[in-house]
Image (cartoon, rainbow, N blue to C red):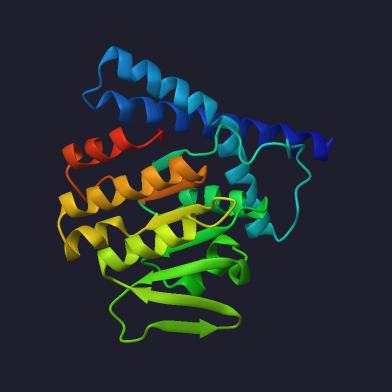
Length: 239
């Protein structure tokens, strides 16, 4: 009787959390100035990403509990709800979801490049990345060109033109690739929004042409809403 009671309590708690999350999302969406047509598109996008959200929650539980959860999945797709050539912006305070998507893609054999303001060696441990198989670029002004630690190699970059060149070279290799960007706000402080927007447009075009993926983690409170709307127009999906 104890196991059945624990299961019922766990199910009810998960059900309550899901309802709270859904209605919080509804309230957040309602506070923005979307047209009815934009709301329909946003709702369909959110619904299509349900399985992906489940996969990200699964990854969080696996890292927290130190176990592997045997949840059936479709190995024929790179990631649920995504298509080759997609660009995705995740509006989040911390880059957890963006890195979960990136980790999923690289786990399935896609080449990965992580452009991050976070120390890449810490990002490997925090997000369960295969550090030896990912190209890292650390957005910092540390006076070094390359930093290596435990088989992980990270290039140090802060120049926007040099960063664009690195990403262009990475995506031009056969097989496409997945690029995750965490640190867009940092780039805006170093340059200006229009320059960063042109940089994002360049990456998006390259990803679309090569059949790769571009994932941006963006803190919605770190810039003006009108700026984020301009970036959203460049994206295939916004989460």
